[in-house]
Image (cartoon, rainbow, N blue to C red; front, side):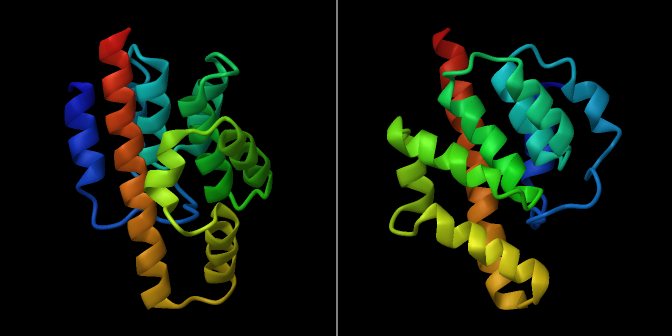
Length: 152
């Protein structure tokens, strides 16, 4: 299975849980582990709700790699870890262009507050909106990583 086939399988899910309790498809983890690009591998782990491997893989890259930092921040957010705010502030200071595309006129802090609120008191309509933002965010991350890997 190619990395693109893995991506298509994971990105065609109806939704991506805000804070998953389990890996979406544990059988894909071994296949994802063979993806040569650290960036793409980390993002595919993130897409598969394998947050530990996403963080571990992203941490293996360069510390100034904004895409890997973004991947770590999302994984931390999905764990409901407020340390993700620190990473997003760092990315904001580095002027990472994907932040503006994903969050446009909404602050990241408001998004993480909404995620935490939704885990405490569910609102299906609001959850769907935030899950759609997250799915779009993961797709943009993958596309950005694809472009970067072709330039290297």
